[in-house]
Length: 434
Image 1 (tube, rainbow, N blue to C red):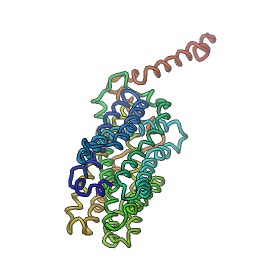
Image 2: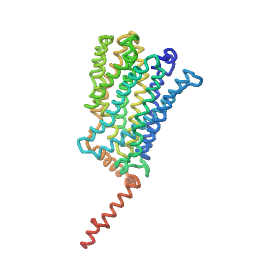
Image 3: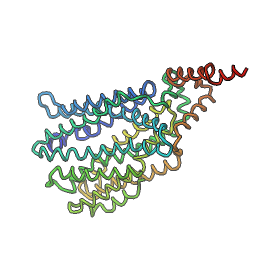
Image 4: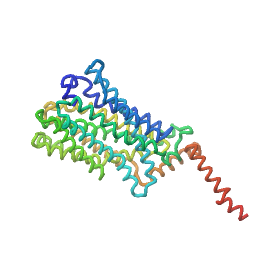
């Protein structure tokens, strides 16, 4: 919308890249900070603070204004608020997904990983659909003569989701796994942690980097591709409408659970699909490409990142992997325009549409290779098993694991043991027998 309102100022300023990509930079900062915070202090409080940040900076982004009515001041203000908004978004990853993974241990076996995916990636993809359909409806209501109002209304609607979660997060309780395994009241043996997890974390981070490099970049530039195919004569809401259909393809892939060869198919058919009369075919094949992306890495990368490390350092482990993904998304938003602009035939030629799919598909196959050969099996009790394995490793290197867990949990455990020994349990029976 901004490129339509400010066709010269926006397109010829750094804001064109910054407004869309700066959120990723803020997200990386938020992921790393809240990953540390959630491990050392509280999963609940990390979620609560990130929710408040989302509410505050969504409001400020909606009200962005340049001093004296300056257009470039507006772009700078919007960029700043979106960076800070990204910090709040980043807090959702290590705190929300990790707490969700730890809470799945309370569910029945056979359903744990399924519900984790349902409450994480499926909800993200549902958000993509909502984020696509909202601007279409808003533009239809306001008409293209009032896009200056439309973009602010779209950003303002973004306040509703975190606001609706605020009360629930105030009432949230810490996961039992966290209370039992946290190192917040003792020293974290960082060198042992690094030696134990560095290679696995590297693989998970690399796969997440590749996935976000492709998925977020394609998501951001799908509207631009549609505009190229449809041409300048079509109303803006038509482009938004087709973009909504594209995003709907995320849902079946996320619900079912694989990725790969379709990207090469998309590249081969692009010269045929790159016409207004074949835009429906473009949307369907492109949608299948995105759907299969959710079926495999989209659903599973968060699951792998949250369940392949011990609870004590899970927030930071997940944060580093997720931050790698967002760095990939950030890089992708700059690399994709470079690929398109430097394609043989120029940015309006067929290769400009084909080359991004060639690059993405090749990277997909590489990430599948990494996952197949270097990632462990994720079962129903992986979190518990990983905690046991990590404790055994620490103890074998002389670390005292008795100090792990919150003080409240240690007191409760001690109280339970004392009751069994001196109350009506084993101790009382033993004294009576003697």
